[in-house]
Image 1 (cartoon, rainbow, N blue to C red):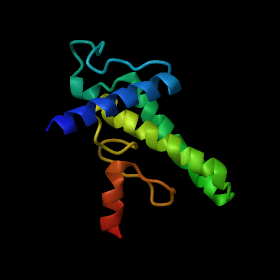
Image 2 (tube, rainbow, N blue to C red):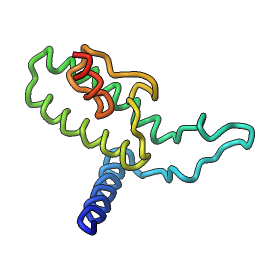
Image 3 (cartoon, rainbow, N blue to C red):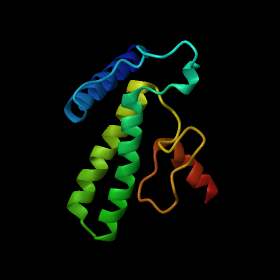
Image 4 (spheres, rainbow, N blue to C red):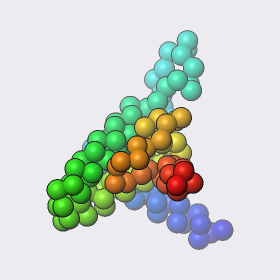
Length: 124
């Protein structure tokens, strides 16, 4: 149990470092500035929205790189894309698809988010 706790702490620390390097700072997902009339389920922290948008744009970019056979850029892009997805998952505890809670990654892209890997494998 202690090893799992340590691993989780290291993953969170890693995600924070990646966030600082790529986004400038990690927003506190627990400090939502919301109106009392708006349900919390309808509010998504701005950092989460930006990460999801960046990951969606990354799917398009990586798919274009693969079509151009730019393997060096593709490898570096996959590495960054994976780190950004980990950042999304650990910082905001988000488990859905990067295209939205009830959506799935398109079939034509070269990489799927963690949520959609199993979906696309089952679909076949």
